[in-house]
Image (spheres, rainbow, N blue to C red):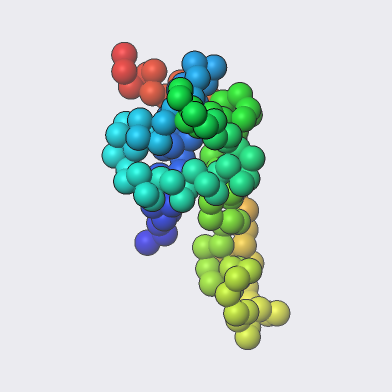
Amino acid sequence: MLRLSTKGQYGVRAMFELAKNYEKGPLTIKEIAARQGVSISYLEQLLNKLRKSDLITSQKGPGGGYVINKKPEEISVGLILNSLEGPVAIAQCLDPSAKGCKRVEGCVTRLLWKSLGEKIEDFLDTINLNDLLKEEAKLLR
């Protein structure tokens, strides 16, 4: 079974919360954690990665917290996941951090997995935070 890690799932959920608060001011890590049911310590790690990827900014002091750096429609799910997890590699032979497969040169299935990964990335790049906000509005009707 192909699964997205909790890092990716929780990161998208955190970004969704920040998008909901776009132009209303920063959200604290406690607010995000409570709204999405994520531990503060794990969320802290994810927000740090998202900050280093320049998707969010942290604001210190009273009334501080986190804000997204772009409009919700400018931040795709693909961009968030890539920032947290790197490129889609659905097979070990496609994982740049793993040792290569000995059959790479003539492996037909590697081409299949590569093509599927590209299609997944393309799809994730078509969905942005604003799309998720619209979906939530439909659910809440």
